[in-house]
Length: 521
Ligand code: NAP
Image (cartoon, rainbow, N blue to C red; front, side, top):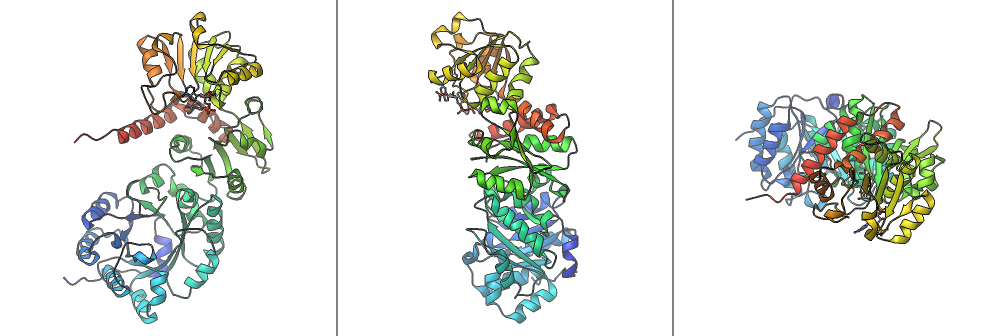
């Protein structure tokens, strides 16, 4: 079949017209790729066909041609990266050229040629291709983010319409390096730049405002064409990439690990609902030094702090609230207009708010199981509100220490029945990820309210038993929402949309549970 070029493109006008997200299409077969293209092209009219992913790229082109003829609004990029340059195409340089030339003839207005292949190719061949198609010359560093300016300088020797510089973030600070590079170089050249890897998420969301012509999004979480790639759907719906601009305030949750955090879902829901020009990112910080550098350089306006940094962050703060000082742990950081860092502990609000909606805390008899960070927030917060608090912990000396500090009492397991508790709070991880584990025996669960801080699963064994006994229950998601709501209020000065946040996190947990269930044949 003779493939005629349907390109009417004037390459130099492209950067202004292109959408912010390019959907990277992969799949073992062209049919898979086209099925994704068919269902997603309306929302993502810039498509990259990763021809190196299919077994016979040349044989795939007529089908792509038919698709592009019937989807005239699509701008298509043809990529056939060679295996030695990080792609999957095992053919020779000549075969790569044949695929790219025919990809253009099949309707791909732009083709991507990696710098290693470009440097081995004849100048005239590149010029001929470029006279018909837009050309991206690309470079990928699969190990680090380094020498970006020098790399670009070498790439500029090959005349092209776009220069794509993709590195790997091994620290969060690597994103700052990438974005500074984009900020200084994008005035003179049409650049596409971002960092791969889990730590590269900052650049995947913010590189466009730093000067990248577009960023890449995957078809789904399972169909990534590069490590750390976010799905195009999440880039749009969670991170609202189309609205990110120079004035967008950047927030994040920092911890190690951070992959499974639900904070981005809940916080981005709140930012969208309240029309705050902000975006909230998961930040996998391997050191606090790395995190603090990003806070100052990006800058980050607010942080949620999670394990293992709730205690160690305190030393990096200029000032802290009374709860942080008492508890010795901080879960919320604000960067003031003066650049100073202020610490808060909103886990206290996470415990107190759901409880005071059910009972009067003053004089209530409360059993707190656990003596770690979350238990400390509960014990100090409830004492402050006038509750009588008993602490039960696996390691009794830790319970005794906390009881001394907070003027609370300890209790032995054998004595539990001697006190008629109004409230039982589980502040241990027992029950997390396993709906059968429980910190108490069924007959020990006696109170007016049972509060489980564990939120995955939503319905723990402790809550199931309590509910069956007619006891009012507070699931951990409510604490999760309320501590996040307080963070939102501290950062934005606006009341948090707690109902929407609860709905968002409940749906996310249900989806996660469904994804973990073994599929029945
Ligand atoms: P942490 O500082 O590590 O403290 C854990 C506490 O649980 C310690 O007292 C520990 O006892 C006890 N513990 C651990 N494993 C146990 C076991 N198998 N049996 C009995 N006791 C055990 O953790 P944390 O930050 O306080 O967090 C505790 C739980 O609260 C976690 O599940 C966390 O996800 C949850 N949490 C939820 C929210 C929310 O928003 N819903 C917020 C914060 C925390 P030892 O002293 O004997 O080690």
